[in-house]
Image (tube, one colour):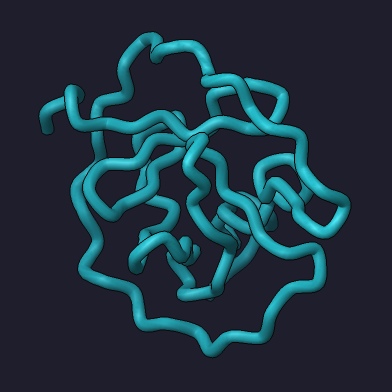
Length: 121
């Protein structure tokens, strides 16, 4: 995979937390953790996570809107994570009604096996 079309995703404190390639979202180990439909971001399980902002964060309203689960697209191959990315752009302060997913709910992108290693199923 070509790393030139990787877009870094940041947390509101400027920390690099994920990568976007085409419509797929990856963690910093290069594993697929979600995807985009337009600007809407979904987890691998099809749960709505938020919206991709213009300053490369994943944000949503504090009161989570109810949305149906989406069927996941075919999984993409893992990517090679670059050793560094550009510094975060100047990030606007968020209104109380908006949350940064990677600050408030980063576990939404974790897999069951990471949450409960003894999980069988």
